[in-house]
Image 1 (tube, rainbow, N blue to C red):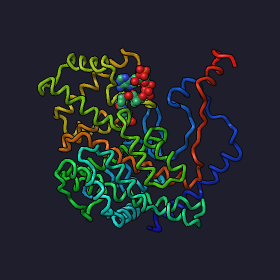
Image 2: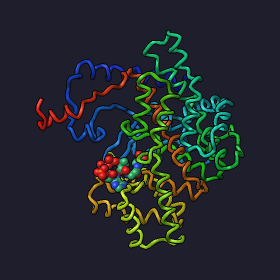
Image 3: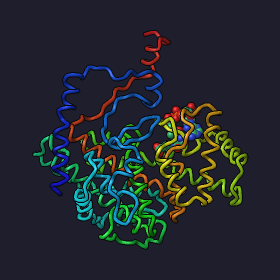
Image 4: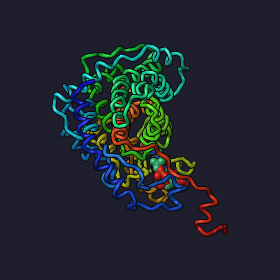
Length: 438
Ligand code: CMX
């Protein structure tokens, strides 16, 4: 492995450990939060009981990666060659270390990914053996877990000589190995499922994002779209279903292949990552009903109300933490305004931006009526020719793997323990509430 990245991380992790150790040893009893019955039954919403330094989600400001907002990340990180967006490699270095990388540091991650890029043939064979109507998220999850036998962490742990302080090193090794292969695997699934198995092999000259675009088969500027998409979806602190699942699985010292496969499974739910496909599906239904015409505001309001009355959520709106428009939505909207302002689908989504929040406010249920990342992302993909919308969550997953592996490497570096919150029974809560005598 490149000594550059490993040594930098070693220095960072070792310097950080005393901070964690001191908090536990000297301040372990200091109260951070209280939990009420609503939170216990309500999915632990808002309970402060997780730690990560990779990103932080402020309800009103949105996500900061390593302290930087999305516009700051886009401005400060080194741009990819021939692109306007930062390279994913530079961004991953930044997520891991918290430092803006030099050209040499970006290159070191590129070199790591290049030399680990070859996907074992058995993964392709396994994917070919699956029924073609398998959901691409199930295919991705299966492909990742099929590679568990490659885990360096698993082997070294089994051999019994690995010191706890060094767990993060083979975890970094596994993460680089897996990430290097993900664009090829995702693109393979796409071409297998939707392009008659006409596979485009990787181009060793290209960076991670550009190579994905190349293997999908969509020309420039889709390379920049791919880079932007992966960066925007990478991390959203650690309580969301995909990040939390990855962290939880890894906390049992299951390796990165198990953890990221599980992460993919969590992301595949319609209330989480799958919402981006649901948005496109929903819009297509409206489109059909309107015979391709852009609905008026009044007509669109009716579609939204009809969906709510049928007992469905409006995909792409609302959030468990955010209480304003998602800056990941805004970043993509700005991209659309610049690159595809007249696209009919974009106009649909923009109309929804106008119509949905007042309706959700009037309905009075959703705590956040504003759009999230998923409301906008499908429009860009569709515009550039990726119209198979059940593939969209795979793009989300490829990006999310960057953040979740960075988290797992640091979890191991700082020696966070296995996660194990405590359960209670309904009867116990009734007793605590004073509505049932002991
Ligand atoms: N449309 C209709 N109703 C909504 C809604 C929406 N977009 N968002 C929330 N609500 C409803 C909830 O279903 C809930 O109803 P009940 O009381 O009947 O159960 C009520 O409003 C309160 O929910 P909340 O506290 O505001 O939201 P939660 O934290 O429980 O859930 C989320 C958050 C994202 C699951 C929810 O807003 C939702 O279902 N949105 C649509 C799906 C979506 O876009 N998901 C993607 C989120 C981003 C991502 O992870 O990718």
